[in-house]
Length: 156
Image 1 (cartoon, rainbow, N blue to C red):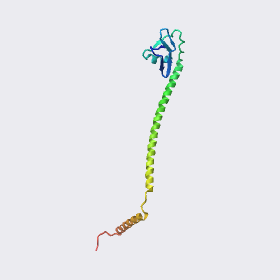
Image 2: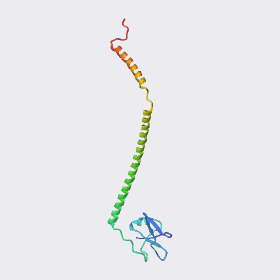
Image 3: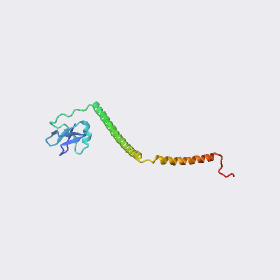
Image 4: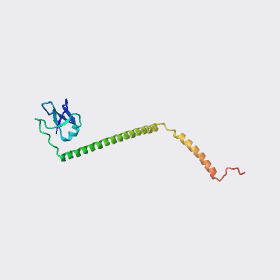
């Protein structure tokens, strides 16, 4: 399809495709060809218009096969879906990495506490066993007194 550039315009970029002046008429109007499916985008721009083939200009671009156009559209949709999925997976990967880092930090903190506990001087075992055995023997004495049938009252 042929299009006419607005005055003082020599090129246009549509969907990452660059179009430049292909021919100019005797009045100084500049023309270019672009595939039909770009027409809505190009014609929505100020100053651009549809044109007939200018005198001396090359033949119009071949028309796109509708079946091929449908396949291209389908593949484009598939590509967009894959890009969306990729973005989602990247977000999930980022979240998993942050979780892993937090878990690693907690692990390191707990490991440091454990190491600190293991390196603290322990109480002397003799003192600890003396205290527990003396309280154990007084407890045994109380149990034997209460177990002998004595009531704790003086019966004399």
